[in-house]
Image (cartoon, rainbow, N blue to C red; front, side, top):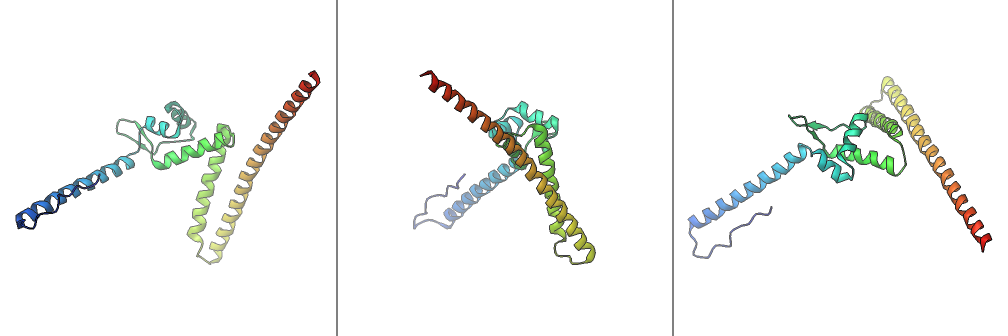
Length: 189
């Protein structure tokens, strides 16, 4: 909401007119600040399940099902027990949908993949927290952390490679079937 300030005062304005204009401006600015705070509070309070579902293009039932499977848990609940989704929850949901729709992963594969990504995030935080420490113990922890990160990344890469190989095999089969149909059509002419 933009503040609407009174028109400039005429040259004959009194000091009282200037004070009234300032008071009106201050009141409008205070209202704007309250509106901004309310918007922030609404964001901090999360959004309803139906609104979250609409934003990402799934049903509320899908969100409940993902929660039931442990894939997505709302960060917040109202006093009455209603789910509230934060911006981070929506980003997590979009990641789930990306893995499902783009990579064709099933829900078990998504759960495993997300668990590995979560572990990677934890390891990265551990590494960064100890990065500047040069003691022998810290260096050993850094090496162990990097070793686990490398292994997890290799595991994720292998999962994707395996998935892509299956997709390529299916694509090759479809192309072969289409080619065979074209050949039969050509023979029929």
